[in-house]
Length: 475
Ligand SMILES: Cc1cc2nc3c(=O)[nH]c(=O)nc-3n(C[C@H](O)[C@H](O)[C@H](O)COP(=O)(O)OP(=O)(O)OC[C@H]3O[C@@H](n4cnc5c(N)ncnc54)[C@H](O)[C@@H]3O)c2cc1C
Image 1 (cartoon, rainbow, N blue to C red):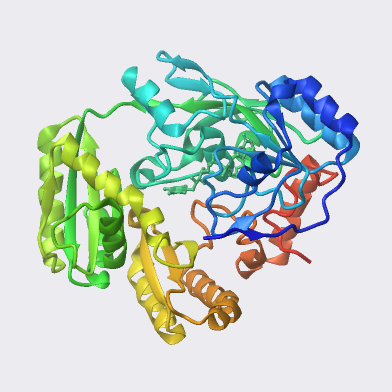
Image 2 (tube, rainbow, N blue to C red; image 1 turned 180 degrees about the horizontal axis):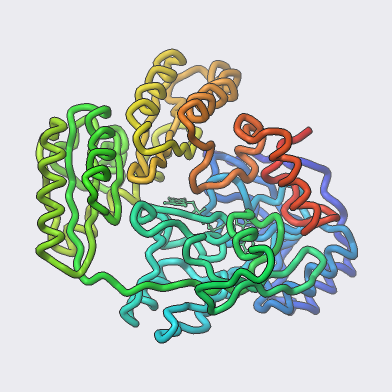
């Protein structure tokens, strides 16, 4: 698919002396302004968007980040922090050109403290690499976005990422104990520490978690770790209807069972994955599947909970209950789940929304989405982290005429979000507002709420140079 070239504002001109200063800070080898590099750093994984920066800079220390921001604030140059570029809301797109500040060279795990159960890391470490290093020490960092093989831990902190295991363990914010961050004027701040308790002053750590690169650049992260569970069991359960699958989600949780993942996958998502990976799963023509993981250290307890889940599922008309006990079979199922996003998107022009509602409202959310799509005569494919109410909705253009899609999409999205808000939900559970959802934020945030958020932004970034154009609607 060709990239839609666009620039939100006429970019400022970067002087030769500014480029020279950037080279002095990071070394000339880490400053790029050739066409290929600017194109590579102009997009992320959000639909078909491309906003090139004028220069890409790759610092390798907090001090270098600070020097870059001092320079940028002195010259009023926009700076957009960038992790691995796997974001799904256009957060790292340099809408105003300027400097793309890539954290990819800051990729060192600084410490895994096995006494205090804390990991200290730079932001550019790939999440899976971090998890594997931690697991070698018999400890566990459970937050595992489906993109864990490529996204960075700094991006996860900036987006407050979730993933399948959030249902049991929580999201990124639940594990961040402290940060080193550089303010837009170049000042370096440290928040929190190797502390499980700390109420000295405002909680700046959690102000920065989920701030989408708009308040400060995160250069060091302290993460809480927990003991590594030794046993895992997975179940794959096909259902004849979306409704029965969705009702089973609440029934499992109400029975006091604590799955470490409870994922929902609609038939068309499974089919797209089968076509992409060439893998076959039983009952792949069932309307929906639940993928459920149980973990712990007591096999009898896990078996007992699996049996109970089976009973609940069969009482909700499940077609079967399939067990995956071997590590290999479990990996195969996770591969299918992690492939869904890309597989579904390869089918057609699409728009993905990251809806989240209270868990017991998922059946109603799904049925109202299907009604909405039937009225607009478009296909939708839904999957996601049903255990915590987070359903990714892919609206697919397929053969719809371009003008109907282009003219109708904004209204369709507004109607979808009106349903979500009506059900007590939120526009985004884990992908963030970024660029692609900014015009919709006022569907759920009041003017007073937006005004206080804006004042927080202004307090951190009075010049408005850090990741401009994100989160807030255009006026
Ligand atoms: C196939 C696929 C599956 C996915 N599955 C999930 C999932 O299960 N759960 C989930 O939550 N997300 C998921 N995502 C979304 C994405 O991977 C996450 O949002 C991730 O956290 C982005 O990390 P990144 O390093 O790629 O950040 P980027 O995309 O580079 O940046 C994201 C935002 O963070 C800011 N940022 C990055 N690094 C820093 C820093 N050091 N300091 C300050 N700001 C910074 C950027 O400015 C931007 O606003 C998925 C994406 C894909 C493509």
